[in-house]
Length: 399
Image 1 (cartoon, rainbow, N blue to C red):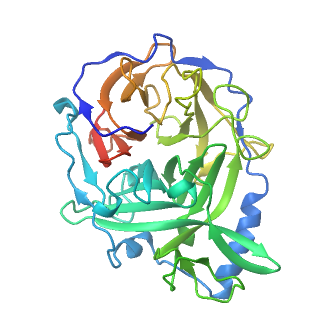
Image 2: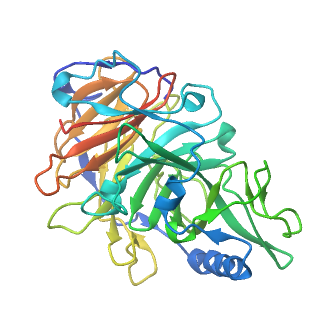
């Protein structure tokens, strides 16, 4: 949904429809990794053993390096109009990323609040956003260290795919990828893209030593690593499909779409991951996108496999919210980015299973959401990312 950023203070009200956020049968929904972790893992191991790449000592060391871009703390696009009760905070991107129609567009949001229960990664507070390039030809993650809000640290990381051609190991861009959503869990980064879920690991954060447009080691695999001018690349370690091939079908069928993604740390209950489907504004039916809860393992930092080698959904819902763009949950409530009730713009909604959702605020350009739970007495926060002419990354009090 392409809309400018404007947030308007409103009271809670009915959502796009009076229908309930209704439970549906989840038994047919799966994520299937097949043998992808073995295939990509073998290539990554050979590349690292060859000495062609040098993994970063840590994410922190990558963040501490030369700063090519300068995001700024504060909601620079004012007046935002967020209701004052929501206590909005956040940051804006570097001017070179700050506007609709530029090279990259932000989509998903996660952070150290997902990566570790205490919300800290290597003694830092870090947000991470997923972005797609023009025509979805490239995708990246951007890490922002906001430990010191007076001096943000920033690192773009290009997402790549390990390849083998004619016995030569290499890597290429993760192309045709919209980077719809991201979850950071332990060392794992999970990036949603329609009918696929891509897995990456910070254990394989590769530094590049050649700053050129080309991606990889060159055609014959003998050149120094290059990542389209990025200082670091992150190779895919595995991938999941929601069906037997790429592609998906929103609303109906078992090949559901992953167009929004976030982590839910449910307190006493095991951690889980939630996803949602986007239904196009051009669709004759805009409601009915599905919201799914998936199990995730704190031991492997990956979605939990059943005995059949697949990840099976824990629960599923049909949402009356039109064109869902973001989803988050605190274990009981669901927070949804989608079309407003009275106007075709972006809104934040709150839903309880079996009840009609209620609209909380108008937030133009709202994409993904992420729930930051309380820790050691801190108050929970709801994070969000917007696209459009005036994109921001924000966090607010949970409505």
